Image (tube, rainbow, N blue to C red; front, side):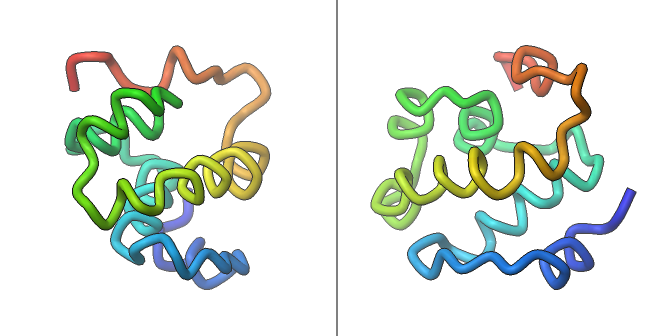
Length: 94
């Protein structure tokens, strides 16, 4: 799999509202890293927006709608295998 920085440079991600470190964490997951995420990023990856809102810092909370759009529209189709589902992404207790 590609490293997150390569993916970041290959995909035209234009979401200035989202902190770059959050975008890079999403790319890190999609590049193959399946561990080391905090509660906020785990909730984002598991598409649990309620939990993500509770866990987000003020910067990510303000951008949460954009983060959801980024994951759904930009990354899901590009990175997920057809058989992979959100249920298999990260454990709930990560």
